[in-house]
Length: 167
Image (cartoon, rainbow, N blue to C red; front, side, top):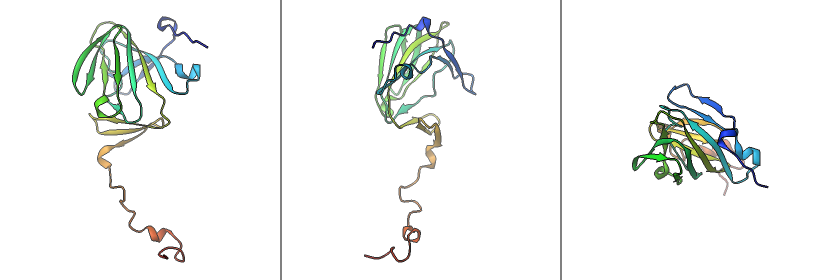
């Protein structure tokens, strides 16, 4: 079955963060409407003078933006680029795929955001040093990173004495 989504006929929900500069309008989860198994996608509106999500990259998801109307400035590790209607941008996994949009114009920018559907993704924020475990929205500071074996040196104490330490 084909599903047709027209940006002008979709109702959008405002997503306002506690920081006023981060604000956007998003469609209902379109992938949920069609029961997509491999993709997540939304149509988003970015108002003038607003940023999309904080600068970030994904460890387990690829992402594509398609600019449907308007313009925005894209921030990547390579620099800043103006995007216009019809532009398609692919973001690979990992630090080289970091991205953020800013609407530098006086008109809304409408774009399609397509992501691979990962059961679990790790989203990292280079500007703030945060790590977000998705879809759970569990956010941690990367500076708290520890060695894999930290506090594991007394493993035998967790086991019954009659088992632990026997060859």
